[in-house]
Image 1 (cartoon, rainbow, N blue to C red):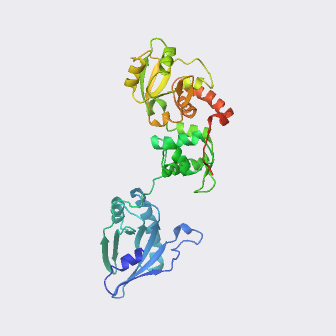
Image 2 (cartoon, rainbow, N blue to C red):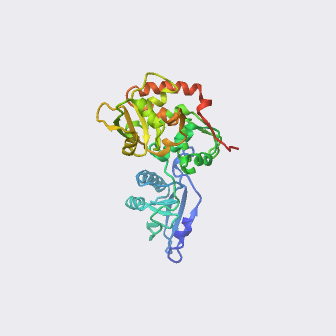
Length: 362
């Protein structure tokens, strides 16, 4: 406890006492302006000073120091008006980084954290205590997720699209090769918009608005810029390409217009898009020529291997999961968005077909 840690380092016959928490000048209705604690420091010569204490259970980042200092000084000024002496301001938290501690010092705020970092400076009675604790946060606090960018978040988003709830956090983590912590972070991002609903704050996921999730993910994803695209030419046309795909040994997954056309034909597709591990190797295997213009094949190095997961097979061809195809069309060039809307209509009507059951749920 911080009061004991500071009190143990005071000179002999000095006391640090905890007083009853009291309002500091505002009306009782305004609970945000009540000190978390008020300490009294008593020196051996009889001088004393109040310490206004603010306690933050969550991480205090450097950018938050100005606001915290302003709140503490407002409380201190109010106490000054009542008691006639200017109280000392102090912040207590689980962990304070070196930069946060530096800014607190500049603002004239004493501090203590649970790793042992202490700075306690009082003018009257005069005392100064500074102890070094941890310079790295030992509590591994997860920062809130602000987008679905990146492979780790995408793996969870794909799982939420692909699998039919209800399911638990660990179940989805196991199915997607993600950590339970990442599943929780993605869920926390989506819950305020009711895209994901849980039975309780730490309970199972009971519903996922998959269409809203697809549109939300599309805000942070772009087929052309999220992946690495190269354009190639199959001189004999896409029929020849598909014939070779049936016999190739490379890993691939067809996406884009050709994949969406199977379920929701809008117009005859002309450009084939294939996820592959290495475009040059794939082009050599498939007999393609590099084309700066006039190409009819896109070889796509994916943003994450998740594009190869839960693929679908049709007539000897490997297709990306319909949910991945949807996202690629939604954010793709040309008539991709129109093809995505047609695919969405099919998916609304056939959810029982394309959405996968989560096995071993209890």
